[in-house]
View (cartoon, rainbow, N blue to C red):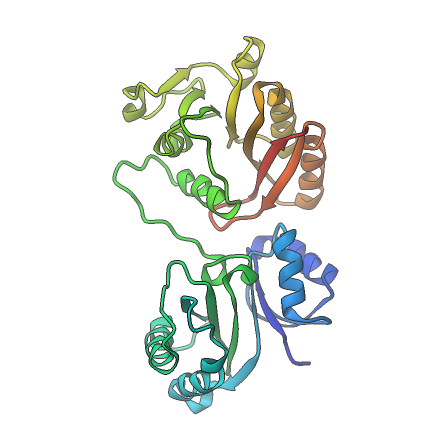
Length: 337
């Protein structure tokens, strides 16, 4: 069987990702690396990509087409030259492109060994502009075992603009915690625009990573947590810190907010119930973001239960297992009309 696409997920959630692929009529050809599979789809890659663009899977993070397979035994120069011959005329000349290379296993190559020469030759041959940060079209190259898999697609077809769904953010001066990356990735992948100078509630805020991100987005934040926030936030006049538990604040007639976020370390079902209780504190135009922490075993059941609880009050606008998530899924919520 010849693969038509390569799919990627967190290896911890491999079984759930494989179930999503199977539901989409995909048949696994081989596992290329933990959490990375070559797949033969019964339909066209672009039909599946459009289906998942409209309703993305939870656990599959990234897909890319396989249109050409080359033997690595012929050398990387052959991969580059064949790719130029094959894909130059397929590039839209006015749309920025990027070459995204992944090297799997113990191969003696680096992505740069392909990305630089192939990008340069494609620019020279086609005149298409190169933009590695915001490409409209992507030439994906995956080196695995004895083969190179190549495919061209639009960035919107791949579930993520980043190779393998690996979205990295630069660590900033003043960063408080790694958790900031989770919120930044959620805002990006769900295409969330926060309201100008909105009012935000951060449940379980300490030490304040998500509060810091919300302040960067010009939100006025009420941070609820018995523990202290980072000193930089204690001095921020745009932050109101209530040293209460989320349950205590809920009993204290809380205010109404444009944005509510919850990254608390609770069981997914308990966290969902808390978020439902806070539904009355969200403006009709508002939005909420929650991370559902999942157990080692039975995570699919826990996730389904948590999502069903949230549906009592919210419309689930998105649910994804993001690169910066660990044993959790990030959910984007909107109030029901």
